[in-house]
Length: 310
Image (cartoon, rainbow, N blue to C red):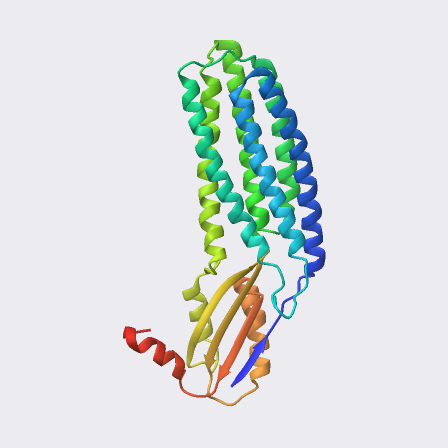
């Protein structure tokens, strides 16, 4: 047998340091705006502003979790935690999504309660504060996105929430305009219900994807069958066993596989070429490949036998 692992280093320390600064700035800016919006919400008794402030507070907590996860992910591997703490960037979105789902339910309940007798709300402060929120959330989303981080679930979760915040703030401006010009007081609780719906829809996708990542599912965007077919198609490879693909966090994808390759040859050179190809084609940058010289994998046959198939 011949095993080889390749660690594809993208200057992780620098990348995580940049992510930490980004989350710090976005968190602090959004926390300041949340305090401003909540203050005006209480002063005007506006559920639209209070719901948006609570929504922003949920995202501030999410950004704080992402910030903390980015810092923890910088810790080097140890004898006990051999992969380091990168998976913190997978657990952070999961916790964020759970908090937001709970928040959506509470907000929807309050909105329904207020529909029976909507309070009078001054529209101009609602419009002004919500307009500030559009600028704050778009600016923070631009910082978090950063470019080139499409595979970072931690950043993408924060980015999607900030964009949802900007959309909700825009809806609050429109609701304020409706209350000002048309006298529709029901728009205020309707805005609260809209925020609850936006949060519920947005957080469900993040909850599902972050749960999959925490359970070592194959990352979205990677087709396991396609990877297996690619490996089977390599020169001299007779079979592929024990193929596992999972996310380590922050755009790092790991893979293990046993390749049955009985023909003699330069297996080191073969594995090096294959590792580069896996990274370029699938984004798998932490592959561990084991070459087997026999015709099959005895352990794999024992595992498959009770089920009668592959």
